[in-house]
Image 1 (cartoon, one colour):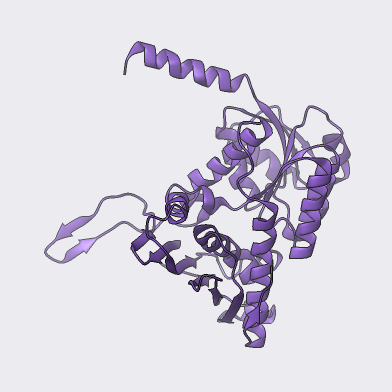
Image 2: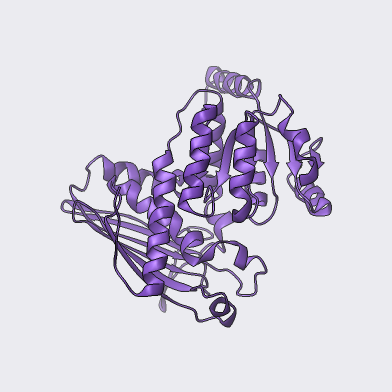
Length: 354
């Protein structure tokens, strides 16, 4: 690399650092800690506040990522954060049931909002959040991180660009490695809202349509899941106006790793995105071939996706990019998932109107 190129790259980095965006992070639990890592990595973010009830957990989380001089505030003191004019954006990682309240409070306080999906616990509430965002003329980003994935993101673009012609079928696989005893499982909104939401959005983004007919099915193998009248193994079936079909297959528990796949089949070919392993070494010997294990869970598999969506949020605040996930995208995904879950529980086929 030439000295001139090194100088140019350093100038670019230094310019980016001088344009820092000041953020507040709400919640540092399972997903909040993931977004905290992205914030810590980002050269153009200044994290001023961490809003969290568990102070010891907050201190450890900040220490783990090497962030200093971040004020830890409990939810009773949230007005201090929202009234601080230097805070330009809020990252919402609190439990799903609290999203609507936190999102609308932040918007009405004049803050741009990045919200971990879903924006609210149901489609009507999510739509209300976006109405507030439009009234306040502020960006509200629903964090569908798979859109920002280095593998899945290009599949969306290439599908929409017509590379494989008319799309006939989309298949997604989402098999999680969650411990059945995970204490926060009941707060995640159920199998369909928690898991299927991302892949429903993926399917719709690839084809550029919303389904007109949906169905679903599921079963609870774990007793704790069954007690909550939820599923740990489920499918959602979508049919689009063009005639294309999609199958979303999901599982709470997968013993061989975090299994994440996307397949888009068209009249002129297929685009496929497969799993990510711990490394890329494949061993060949007289017994056959072997690969390393799949990555363990979502923080590892989607490390770059989480960073990329946070970078998008920063650029939206700075006016360098427009929101790539619209109100209708975020609300429609919830509406579709709600219908799929209802179909699974009632063993019916449901028609959707848009």
